[in-house]
Image (cartoon, rainbow, N blue to C red; front, side):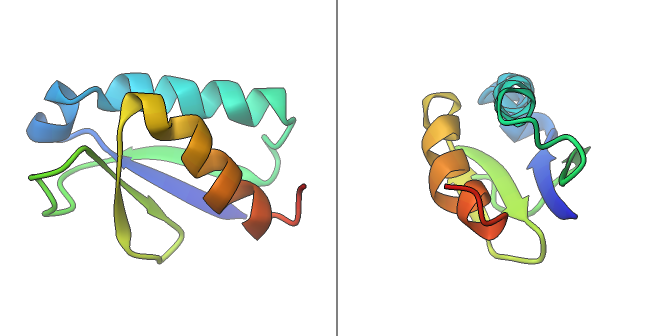
Length: 84
């Protein structure tokens, strides 16, 4: 199972972490990947200067804007699941 962790700490919350989570949820449902993807909120990842902090599995923390969620999903999530 692939895990997407989205920071919900103070700084990321102010940058839209709950909207990022909502958009990831919608994409997971649209692609019917509920059985393959775990989406969870986590507290501070110590990357508080960019956009919302997101970690996919044990990968590096990436900064994701609300408007960039779909691009990250298509470029990072779908290929890891073997979905094209």
